[in-house]
Amino acid sequence: MANIAPGVIFAEDDDVAPDVVWVSRSRLRTALGADGKLHSAPESAVGVLSPGARNIGQDKQTKLKLYSRLGLQEY
Image 1 (cartoon, rainbow, N blue to C red):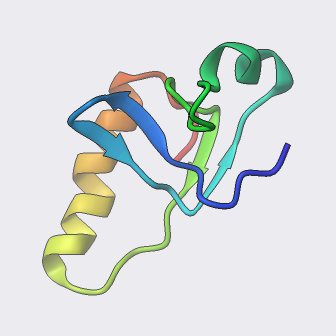
Image 2: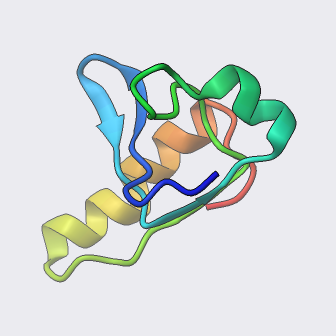
C-alpha cells in the first residue's frame, strides 16, 4: 500500500510527518488507522533535515527521542 504523506500519530498533540517510512505487513495491520495514518511507530523512518538551527535540532533530537521511546527501530 502506498501512502503519499506518511503521517504518524501517537497522540492528538504528538504527531510527526517523516519523509519516508517502512512498515512490515504484519505491523501495518495493527498500526494503520481508518484515517489512513499510522498510529504506532513504523520499523524505519527517514527525515530530510530542514534548514535552520531550530529545525535541525528538532529533526535530530526531538524526533529521535520520540521515535526511540515509541519503538522505531531505525531513524
